[in-house]
Image (cartoon, rainbow, N blue to C red; front, side, top):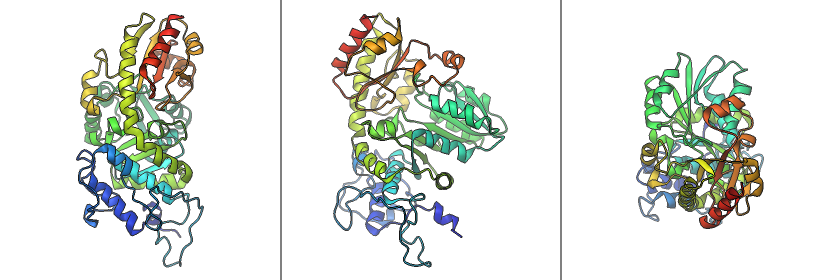
Amino acid sequence: MINVRSLLASARVTSSTRKAFATARLRGAGGVLSSGSFRGFSTADVEDEKWVKNCSLDTHIVHGGIEPDEETGAILTPVYLSTTFVQESVDKYLEKGYSYSRTNNPTVTALEKKVATIENGYGSICVGTGMSATASCFNTFMNAGDHCVITNCSYGGTNRICREQFIPLGMEFDFVDFSDPANVEAAIKPNTKLIFSESPTNPLMTLADLSAISDIAKSKGIVHVCDSTFATPYICRPLDHGCDLTIQSLTKYYDGLNISVGGALVAKTEEHYNRIKLTQNMHGNIMSPMTAFMMLQTMKTMGLRIRQQSASAAKIAAFLESHPKCSSVVYPGLDSHPQKELADRQHRDGLHGGMLNFDVIGDPIKLMDNIRRPWTLCENLGASESIITACAVMTHANMLKEDRQKIGITDGFIRISVGIEDPDDLIRSLDEALNSL
């Protein structure tokens, strides 16, 4: 019989890899990531003189948890395309940390450790998609008869899986406005086991006061998870604000290049990590090694991209706010955003991301069909390419129409994901398309 602790444990690693992950904590990122231990590796395990102390988050995103390969000197983590791993003997089973790639794979483990480091968590699981991460959270912390307080404006796929899969299985959900923590507290029941935040929300750009909601959750012994895909750890790390878990659709800003899909569920504590790791193993929900390898490379430029995207989004939002064909524009960096004070307090370095929305006066379908490049009409966000989406008929078409309109996703609601192109080119294209309506 396989020992459950062996399944839950992260892969044992070579001395050089052990040194790399301990070093990741020594380097730190803004003074926060350097505290505590990481997946059982204490900072006392190593004295690394190769690195200056207290490196910034930007440096950590590139190098955190990664060292050149001990045997070859390769600067990149190798791709381990192996289903199984040979054991020296029964007595030494799992001594090297790996037996079967459904449970652990060295390339995926490297990504999971790096994501956990950047998100300031104890550990993470990297899975097939962002929705896989969301489903893993519900499957781990909810049972039949349990209740969840969830934002009334979540990603459309999150809303759908709650209604179409988990409610028929006997789980209960209250979809409430998270912009006021009092609404969250009022919705809690004796059987509430999970509070599910999303900040900023997709696509309304509503913020949740994560510290206030975390205080409520802790006072009642309830697990608090936040989907922070729009913010990314570069702008806001929910675990720093008291959340127990963070969800990331790695497809978005971690990848950033429209190459791959993936998701991560990050735990603050060892206890919660062990639970999500067991769920991952039982479901066989692990990212492929090749995808993990690509993600390890693309995420290195996340900080550069997000700074450019945030600056461009702010400029485009200001333009749209003055355009006669736009009835409303929502971006956390605008003074007109109703939660601007919270955005400035909760978001790092005055960055508010590359996502915004506006309501168009006129035919939104005509706008979609007429807008010229560099805008791209497709479903995704966070990429280097700028993307424009009509949410009512695309990303949130699976929501009930009355629910969609109730929260403000009108038929003329347009979501844009700003890329890294010249913002003046993007503005000229928008102006041309809007003036044609």
